[in-house]
Length: 252
Image (cartoon, rainbow, N blue to C red):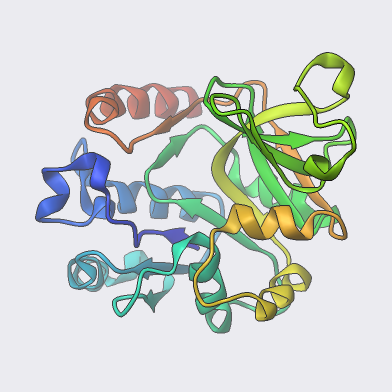
């Protein structure tokens, strides 16, 4: 599933007239880059959610004959459902017996998506993470099980770890691992079933933090990860060179 419903407010004024998914990098829009990366990894069935300028995305897919793939649209034009709600609404479009790989439309990376999908076999959800600098981190045990989330600027801590008698100060003695989330994750059909108890609209990270006490929600740290979040105008200028670099490394 490709998350393509966002408002793209950080990319204004471009997104005042087009969806973030169709903002070009080089000669192709972001959505096409992600679709082609998924296709190269062997994925043939894709769901794309839409909200902001939804008709433009639907027309784009139609004009390109869905790139020869089985692409379904999850329509959120009535209400933007956030990441968790967007997945919940799209569940009827998924294969009920197979895990779903989720990919933000504004993420460019050198991630091996086929290997990531295969690595998720022993977990209820597998989150691609790295040690890049950010203000918000996911917290994991040494066994790479999710136990919390923190904002290091505000000191806020959420998830099961926040209920411990001594709140973690994120030092080495706290025995937690701190990683940045990539926006790429794999979720199992078993965990998707738990979404039936959630409201129509909710963030996926809130869902993971609520369920991680009883589900195997694991980290997949990638030391050699190269990732660019093309969510701001300044990163958009870097994106073409970034994409050329990772494609050259991959022999594309």
